[in-house]
Length: 184
Image 1 (cartoon, rainbow, N blue to C red):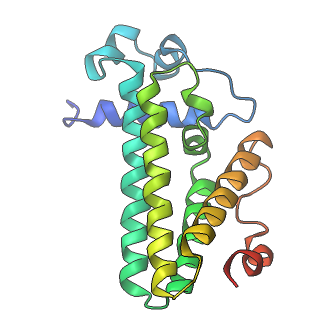
Image 2 (image 1 turned 90 degrees about the vertical axis):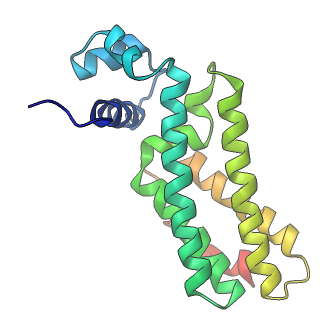
C-alpha cells in the first residue's frame, strides 16, 4: 500500500526525535538516521533538502504544540498568576514528555547546525516569555517583565538539567515546591 503524502517525512522526524532521546546522546548524522530507518541517505534528501530542514520540522512541532496549549491556558484561565503557573507547568510537562525535543530546545542538538535554527529557538523562548509577561501584567504584577524572565530562565535550567542527567531529573519534579519563589 502506498504511503500517504507526508507520512515518510513524519517517520523521519519521529526517528530523529527518538535518536535525540538517547541518554548518552551524540551528534546525529544523516547516515545514522538513514540506517535507523533502513533507508539510504538519498531517501532522506528526497523529503528534506538538508538536516537543518529536519530540525526545522522538530522546531515547528515544538512551536505548534506549546503555543496551542498556551493559547488554551490563556483563554480558559482568567487569573494572570494562575495563567503563568499553568504555562510554566505546561512547558515543563511538554519537555518531560518529549525528551528528544529538550535537546533541540536547549540548543544541544543544534550545535554545529545552521545558526538560523538556534535563532528560531531563541525566538520561541522570547515569544513564551512575552506570553508569561502578558499573564503577569494582567495579574497587576509590578515587575511582570522581571518575573517572566526569571520563570523562563528557571524553566530552561530545568530542561538543561533534564538533558544533562540523561533524562533522569524530571523538569517538573520540584516545581510544586519552587513555584512559591517564582510566583508569589
